[in-house]
Length: 253
Ligand code: OAD
Image (cartoon, rainbow, N blue to C red):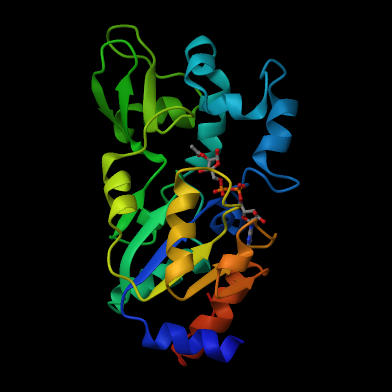
């Protein structure tokens, strides 16, 4: 099987990559739905959280933004470094093989790996807006507060919310455009997502049905059967195997 996968990577010129929280667990950032993921531990950390996903609920945030900002301190930690898989995707781009990367992740690690063609479909911490007057802020405007776990406030007194897509909010317009008309691709690589959150998951699943596709995820997903290859393995172990074949002088970092 691996030799067929290597051949797919060697031949591919236009790869679409779709990533989820599982690509960052080896960087020390927990995912959401694994047995020790955030949605299992949040309720223990924040007694008054009515249900785990409420941390990304606008109504709850307006009442009680503290849990979101406490969690943000962990997610935005400057100590997290890109994983081998983040670096592999950036390397594929430097080889001219990437058509597009769509990530659900808000941890900025694809950017930190040097990747350029990335769409953060669940938003980003790099920009933020005041919930009251809509004033625009950058990450640097609020990072001191955020990294201290404090709630950033606007000059007008409103709470500043990073531009993370909360449940019920629209995804970036460009995502819908790409959903309707994805770029031409010859391989789809999905890494580290339970494929449970729509419409993001639908983007990957639709593509996987129509072109050669590889899913790398520790746990099975409902859509494994739609992929050409569904591999239940640690992402960085998979990456190491593939990258060392594609680039023989590759040294594991
Ligand atoms: P999930 O937590 O739902 O899924 C992560 C998947 O990664 C799980 O199925 C794990 O088995 C797998 N995984 C974890 N570590 C792995 C590793 N080292 N190697 C291989 N697989 C691994 O995360 P997402 O699918 O990204 O929304 O969740 C989608 C959205 O739900 C997130 O974007 C988030 C959340 O609500 C926002 O942040 C706005």
